[in-house]
Amino acid sequence: MPVFDYDLGILGGGAAGLTAAAGAAQFGAKTILVEKAKKLGGDCLHFGCVPSKTLIRTAGVWSLARRAKEFGLPEVALPPVSLAAVMGRVRSVIDTIQEHDSPERFCKLGAEVRFGSPRFVDDHTVDLDGARLTARAWIVATGSSPSLPPVEGIADVPYWTNETVFSQTDLPGHLLILGGGPIGVEMAQAFRRLGSRVTIVEYSDQVLGPEDPDIALILRNRLEAEGVKVLAGTKALKATVVNGSVLLRVGPSRGEGEPCTVEGDVLLVAAGRKPNVDGLDLSAAGVAFSPRGVPADRRMRTNVPHIYSCGDVNGVLPFTHVAGYEAGIALSNAVLRLPRKADYTKVPWCTYTDPEVASIGLNEKRATAAGVGYRTLEAAFRDVDRARTEGETEGKIKVLIRPSGALLGCQIAGPHAGELIHEWVAAINGEVKLSTLAGAIHAYPTLAEISKKAAGSYYSEKLFSDRTKKVLRFLFDLKGRACTPEGEAG
Ligand SMILES: Cc1cc2nc3c(=O)[nH]c(=O)nc-3n(C[C@H](O)[C@H](O)[C@H](O)COP(=O)(O)OP(=O)(O)OC[C@H]3O[C@@H](n4cnc5c(N)ncnc54)[C@H](O)[C@@H]3O)c2cc1C
Image 1 (cartoon, rainbow, N blue to C red):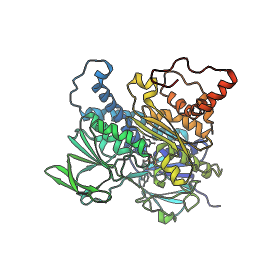
Image 2 (image 1 turned 120 degrees about the vertical axis):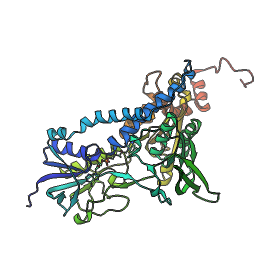
Image 3 (image 1 turned 45 degrees about the horizontal axis):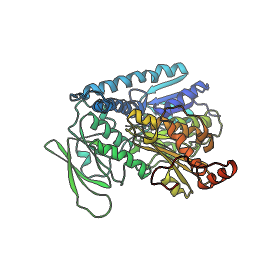
Image 4 (image 1 turned 90 degrees about the vertical axis):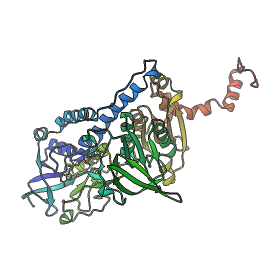
């Protein structure tokens, strides 16, 4: 039997790689993790979730200050924002969390961490800047990078991506954003709230393409109410720079229409991701890949069964919690030799705009595409007392159920949707009955009451139907309404 230096080798020290390394080492597997950048943590910590959510919080505070009068407070005159100071806070939050991802911590757990540029030599061997490392199994967890859309001249204009936006120090007067997906809309609202004019150029007819149009519209309406210009159904054709301004030639993405030019100070490109495979020489290991990623089966195995692919690099669902989940699946298969398989049907996600937009399971688009019969239950935040006290009444919950009442999915657009969705995460994972949710006591006054209302609406239709009333009258000799408003038939 061949002898390898390590039981498990991992390429990439982000969400997937770090989860795999910590788990493998704690199971007692001899583990090495190789990271190309200077620090561990990956996109989520340095250029993704952490900086974006920190920036969003700062922008949210500023937006609340601007709304002071709505809450009965004196109006506040708000001075211009220093983006340098804002990004200083972003930096300090990253630095604090970074401590958790230090190589020393991983060493204490039992995993060796090395920095450098790895390259496969064969299916068990990686060359790390001249050193040869062999492992019985490898996990490719190298993440993804922003991709440039095919727009003439785009590579020649100065542009920001998620890798550069959080180190900026000057607030742009007018920020053009290419892409109305989660990154585009989150950044649009944050920069608008900090004081920039913002225009989003989005190819599809709605922001947040995978969401149902009615849910996405709730967000779009808020963005527009706050002054973000949303050019949906619009294709960027050409980018140029004139006198320091970025000029973006745009036209309708489908059908007829005249092109026009939008002018901004800075272009932020948030229009898709590409897998990080450059320099890995996956072909030397016989690993198949495409511009979409390094495909894996549900056990996270590539076409070479002892080489696994986890996280953004496999092109399935680009979320930190999915990367961690997939790393756990790969670990079961590669280290524990338990044939666990990934199940993506119960993955929640959230876009952290205001209102937040959260989702799990089937929405109407996905149910229709899958040919699944459904009906919807809805409740609005304006009917929830806590939403009134908070001054956050926009949005709704939409639950998809089978005609039998079984849960299929849930979408929430509203305050704290990313927290509220977890009642439905538990319900869908636990196959909880709608009647259990409808009957469960929810604390008053909480936003979570919206979930009970939505579940309860399924029964209230039946409970308060004319037929039920007739049966009750018959059984209990009920005498009907004591009071009827003027003009209504008695
Ligand atoms: C602006 C933004 C906001 C986001 N917000 C959220 C959010 O709120 N919630 C959420 O769930 N997800 C969010 N994401 C997505 C999330 O960041 C990714 O899904 C997650 O980081 C993927 O983890 P990963 O381990 O696959 O990749 P990464 O975390 O990117 O880790 C990959 C690591 O591999 C390293 N690497 C690259 N090439 C090589 C190589 N050749 N050799 C060795 N190492 C290499 C990289 O340097 C990196 O450290 C956001 C992303 C962006 C861009």
